[in-house]
Image (tube, rainbow, N blue to C red; front, side, top):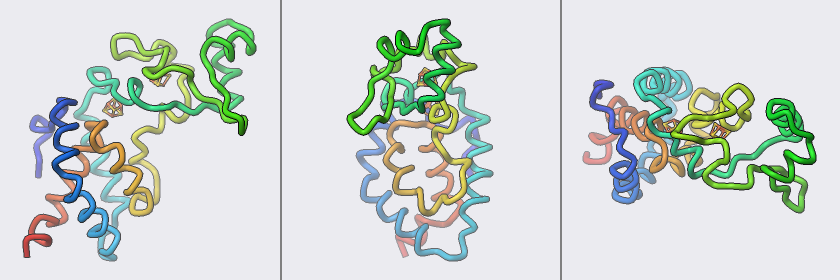
Length: 175
Ligand code: SF4
Ligand code: SF4
């Protein structure tokens, strides 16, 4: 078991490991999906609780610097209220709308990130609150999407690496 003090949080190291472990992570995806004994939701949730408690997102902010953040029209309204702007001014300044009518923050990194802190924290969007989504049900079904962010998010990286150890994944692939 990895001790919290040994979690890797350096974003360059994690990005490098993601490249090195691409094939290993493909194996892990198949290993988890093919193992009916793994109670993966509760297992993933408890590892997520443990790792999230030990990693300080305010020293990272990498999701806010690198993801497209989708927002709903309700959230645009709440943001406008929070910023004390009209909805049209908020849309013009901060939001882009796709041809399909989907809204997203119009900059990467996000406008509202300052020194790794969210300047609209109380009014931040559901997508921001939910990332990296490891508290949700359906871990197995969502693992492929989770692994897409493995090289970006220290919480995901450490949850997956600890999961590999605890599930005996390395023994399984070497045997
Ligand atoms: S709104 Fe806040 S939490 Fe969401 S991406 Fe921007 S800075 Fe990050
Ligand atoms: S959720 Fe992940 S990527 Fe985002 S700030 Fe926290 S550790 Fe970093």
